[in-house]
Amino acid sequence: MASLNKLEDYRTRNKITYKKLAGMLEIHERTARRHCRPLGDLDFHLPIQKTMEKIIMITEGYVQPNDFYHITLKQEV
Image (cartoon, rainbow, N blue to C red):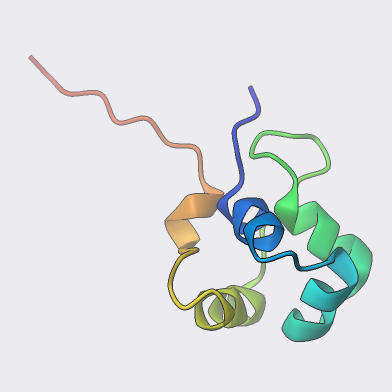
């Protein structure tokens, strides 16, 4: 089950191309596209720590590491 990706949301809201995002993150354009794929998508790629730190800085904290995980917490009764 794929869900929205906050980095992709940030990219589209700010009219940033994948090429520009890749340059900002100092990674290949294909890798930037893969980081923006929906969570759960087969082509989705989790950023390494160095890239994650740049994502947090560039997005001014809008995108956080937990945004790259699809975790559902169940409460015990």
